[in-house]
Length: 352
Image (tube, rainbow, N blue to C red; front, side, top):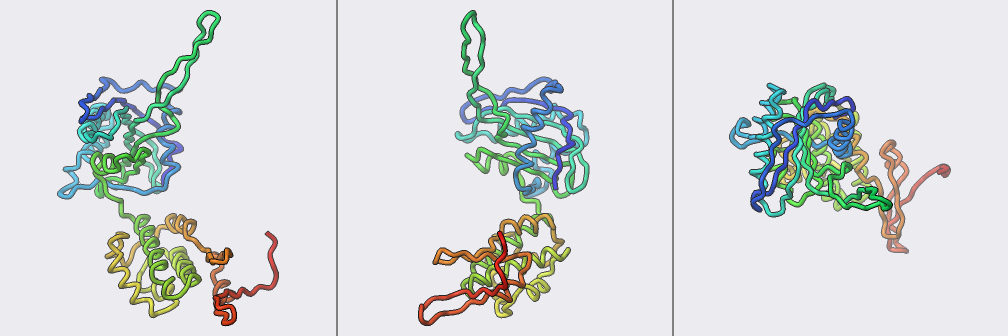
């Protein structure tokens, strides 16, 4: 979990980077920007808002040989070891970004490098480095009194309600490559920011694995349980799966299958599906891991618990009380109408 409420911008350096393939140059400021009481709250909102609004999918610096060969990992380590070096290192970061800006689609723009203090991540208070880029300029109007006439002047500038690109590098989990969050609003070249500039992989902590395993279960429910049984059993399998994750701190696959698999014949199908699809979900070798409660809560919100029928009727199952669906919903076949039906038992209708 991330909390930026009390985070403070200690220093800010601003540069400009062009597109190398179009022979555009870069501009490196000689001094850090002089922060004022008026500008700080505006910049905090501009920099931090996208990270409060997006799902927390973390990354970590990576390199196929050794982390020390990752340029951004080296720059981050240098700054965390000596925060007063931020401005000098910010020039190196901007130059590194300029070297990756060689695709015709990449836009020029301003680069902001900040040193942040009092960042709360996973209940740990740490420092962080923010690297942000503005790319899209917006038209706006200024007005000026000239004699008896009010003149309208068209200008261009940055819209502070939308950050184009940014990342937060936390001084946390250094041995794994630091924990990192990234945003990219203008995905004209998805590889440019994450792969070429940052060179990151997904941060595979318990939050990541919990999300991926539940996604895998959704795939199994849709591809195997539904064709083998019916929509009710697909929904109920996911219901039992989420409840298992919700009530346990540690995941153990054999125990999970014995508890959630209503039809034992599907256990071999589950293991076979994992062999075929496990790599896609990054869980091919995973059989046990700590469960992240926040990831379970997010998954519960996203998993559909509705049976949609071709007669334009929906049956909504209750994930909080799953035994109701088991006891009071029956599926059958009507010979006369040659149609399936669901029989639902109840004592009285509830007020909405």
